[in-house]
Length: 339
Image 1 (cartoon, rainbow, N blue to C red):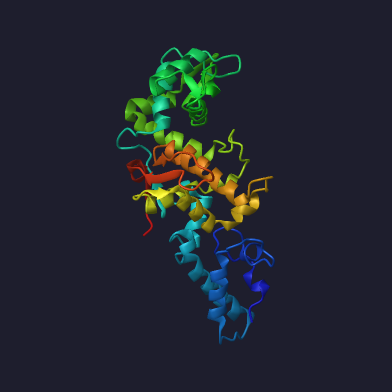
Image 2: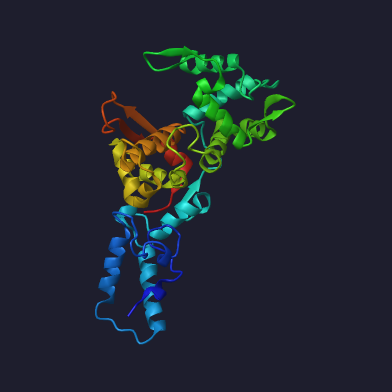
């Protein structure tokens, strides 16, 4: 008979990377819709009629069973195995058997972040830019970049417009400047913003096709996705960025509702809901869906040109707000090697 001790240090098939006996095997685990349900059912079936002559025999059976489970595709993971999922979560940029990232793009990418970065790099130029007392870009520079890209130096809703007064009023520019700093492309030197040697070398050799991968990796690894969006940390959403790109790779050739991707994320990671504290009038599920669409689809995939979103007129709730499809840049920049 197999007891709890046989599960010690075996990797959990849910993809968490934790030992089985510290994760989904725990009694009273509060996860709902747990992907481990099918594993436990399979284990029960595999044990039927078996007798073990020793602990070693039982351990051997468990090892073989767990290897099969960890390498088998899962519907809950959209066809990935738990082993592949662990690599995607733990070592996304070093999982070469599953995915590779282009160091340089074959052609200049079209994306909001690179459009803004090019305008910022031109504004910095050879002489640099003197920051404001708060360390941000000069107001006139922010207005000029906004006029060049958006055709206006105002911000706000369609019905209420305000004149740009500071860098954070043009928030996409603000984020781009922060990401460029984290990527080592822009820095302050002798009291001015300048383009680094690394940035100039990449632009000279590869153009913006050499800049995009640097911005992408800095955004995925170094930038805090929770910055100024009001949803709280919810760090796992950032940690699982590559799974969302895998979903877009697999399903994004057709336009789908944003809820399709949000539900696929929650199906793979139902315990994510446990991270979300309830609010007065909003359920954890509503917060999860809203934050996922905003933070992972809009602020990440769309910002980097990997997805396109059509937004309908706002109505109560979140149904049908987002219509998502993958963009060609996704396949050019990120190559998945899974069937």
